[in-house]
Length: 392
Image 1 (cartoon, rainbow, N blue to C red):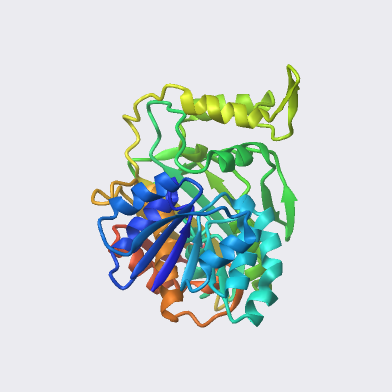
Image 2 (tube, rainbow, N blue to C red):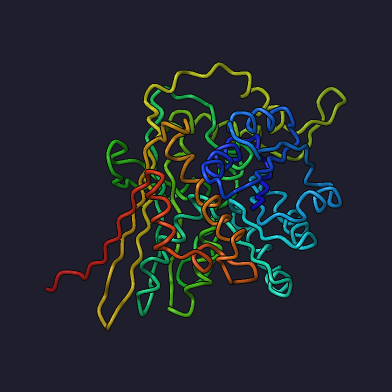
């Protein structure tokens, strides 16, 4: 079994590789990245045979096709801007595809390749991390048992960083996109754009997070769940997160920088040179001193609430997945919940256990029972509860 991890030197890519490395049935793990030295360090750190590093440029179509050909599955953990060209390379290489999400708009474009993948007898699973990913499968776990679905509400929480560090837990480019781009919600049966970081509310997560502020963010769950459960009458869907893993103070600082234009991607002229403000900001943030994350325990809590009806009665389903840091792998619970889902499903694809074809979201492609069992084996705990309202 050969699995290619694109972006294998990145924060999530190396955690995906760590998960794959614990399965001896995965004979070959290819860590592909522009940062060849970084990929080599990851491969060497896995401490097993069959882990190799290669330099890969996802904008080089011919080179990428040659690299992917013969793989049982490809896990794409590079910046979502490149999801579409990577998918097209997978089509030509005739290999299955998984990514971590397309921040709504890219995901919707990716869905247009459904017929191409189906005709090729291949499966592409879009947005299979924690959120999107786990949250979608959480929704499926209860929504598929309902006759009607009224709403799907997703809440993503993590232990707060008491040190107010500006270090990021996943792609800083994606975080700035989430800070600046209008979130899309599904409300009153239609998609609507809202204000970035808007509609704050307090939500009760499990301790040690406790009560935390959450806010809207542009996300891919909202791109697919209303389509999947449209036949069941869904009227509302949104995704809210607690400050992208930052403390509120740190997030407000980044928000201010975005408001004054420092996260802009359009070039500006400075002393005769064209520069992108965001590029400058990211480089400065890399060099800024980071405070110790003394309060960041790495605990993650994802909650999906589904309201609907079953057998003529109103019902509410709540699915919650929590995870503490994985001490052996040396990663936080949040990182594990992003990295393990694609590693789990990639194995199934490479083994030929998944028979579906086309381009599908997790709530259509992933069996909830088996999936949560696999996550539990890695230390994540999922609870499912369905309740009817009290009479009266």
